[in-house]
Image (cartoon, rainbow, N blue to C red; front, top):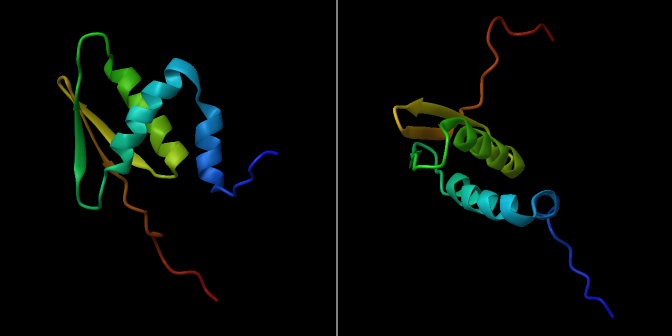
Length: 96
């Protein structure tokens, strides 16, 4: 008889969305995104075979699947990323 467990929806989406080689690569990027703390930034240095566009895309995908928003910037052969601050509503307050 199968064993039934309840898991968070986010974990199910992550596990089912990415399989195979791409899944292995994305697991690495999930680790990078998970390590981010408020007030801290991450830095990835490009190695031969990786392009900045691919690294930025993978970071964005990992963040989206983890439910976070990242700011990703490239400087020379380095990619810097940090968690985006939530934007406050600008302008005049609404009338009640």
